[in-house]
Length: 93
Image 1 (tube, helix red, strand yellow):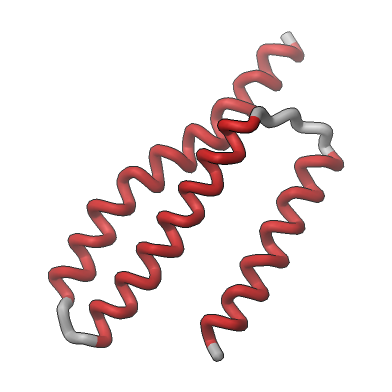
Image 2 (cartoon, one colour; image 1 turned 45 degrees about the vertical axis):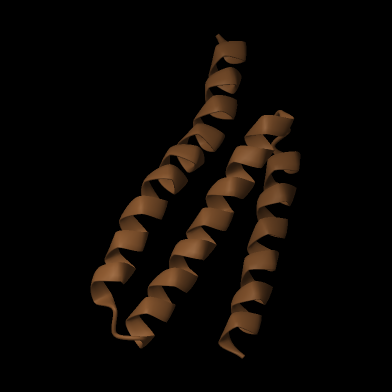
């Protein structure tokens, strides 16, 4: 039940983000969308892996999963936000 509610909130958040991007007329290329989606999927995998490992009382495995999956998620997320922002700042100048 919790995962269903989590999915509803996540879907509403993604819809709000897309509508906000379109309202602000922010241009994003296809690979920026893919990087953002990959970062989101990695974050969801981190969450599921962490919860599952903690429930099974494998705290070390939980934190190692956060470490090894979190670094690529942060890098992809930063790139997905930074590239359109940088392009927008360059076009204003």
